[in-house]
Image (cartoon, rainbow, N blue to C red; front, side, top):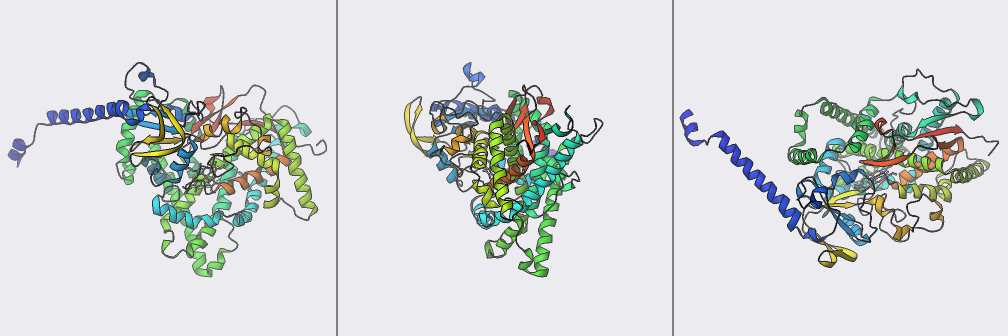
Length: 583
Ligand code: HEM
């Protein structure tokens, strides 16, 4: 046996060198072909540093742009698509032409999210709606849609108010009894202001409080679970979820993007990892990986418990025991019971809980943070909104109701304009990413200027990354006028934003097509209920006259304070009690 091995196997070192040479040649071929001979090369785009010097770029100019919500890829020159280069010669097209965007988002089987993103979603939240593809997605969406119908959302409104009252009471407590300087609990460490009693107020970091509130809301309204994030008796379930998305680490990663060399190595490592089965992640070294995996295990175990508990109830007491359907998962279980052979499996049901947590928490909390920070900087708009809400509340009380109804909230036109305007300027998801499964031509609403003249349609090659930049499209002066960069809610009362392809107010914030946000009506009602409660009790002002906030994208777009970036994402406002007499 030994003799045979020595005779037939080639020596190790030359073999390794040969394999390495083949791999490097293949890599170089790929970079050169993609960078110089792809049919996309005719589409103009900003060059990377190396390309300006006439070299092919190894790291490209794409990944770094992803941290800024509106880099040069807005369509100021009325170009419907521009080209970026990714690491190792990969090509990315940033598409803003409305017909092309509509085509890409509505043909989601031909243009799915990239495999790497899907795999990460699968690892983190399991086989819920965000992960599902093709027929599985259509089936899941059909069963889930009824849970998000306006009729059912009305039933969720009391949970929105219930959670917000707890935050309101907590803030009143902080304002009236400022915590001592020695307080160690991060949650209560809001520095008091100098002014005492009636005029008292406190610095509140919305980036700490709003995610707690929206996690409590999605727990209650999503699946009837109390996370107790606002009151501070946090559950292990919530801690596990928060551990997945550490604020400071995310901020650090967007402020210090990887160097070009690191980017190339990361691209190779991710490419290799994505080809391995998910289960192998358990064998990767490092404490962070282990912590992440145990947090994910806990989320899965808790989700399983919630589903099993609800199912046991049905088995014991019948479908009627699911009651008035006061949470999304209960409604989903009811709809699933009638779905016959296309019903969701247990794994899919469990996946929906983590999916709701992922998709419906930070998105709403960031919208609340941005809305309150704009209102703080625009006292006239804040006063107008407070008056509108107060008048509606007075009318509700006069009619014998103790809280605003779904219809009351829907009818408040300035509240609606304020929420729309913030969602337009600060979409939590700054862009969507898709990939093309084949070489194809995408229709355009007007011809594209290229280095080879005008093209009637957009040439897209297989495996090209397609970016739909929601934040840039929402600021298009051709749609929203020359003041498109300004926060001006009144534009919605004047009938702004004609045209466009988004499912909401012709802005792209909730995307478009069959994969558009299923929870957008839930989010709008939630945001309005929270604002209505907080604005009648509190007054919001900027922390001081010099603080500058700027947005950075770490999966979602979050505020950082200029000069205080090391402290992670934050948005501190002066919050005081509204003086009812003076108003
Ligand atoms: C202001 C708040 C929100 C914003 C801006 C937002 C935005 C979005 C966007 C842009 C997408 C599409 C992503 C893509 O195409 O790649 C999406 C999908 C989704 N959203 Fe939301 N969302 C919000 C709130 C919510 C809430 C509250 C829920 C649940 C209660 C939710 C559940 C989902 C789900 C399940 C999907 C996946 C839909 C599918 O793939 O079919 N979202 N959201």
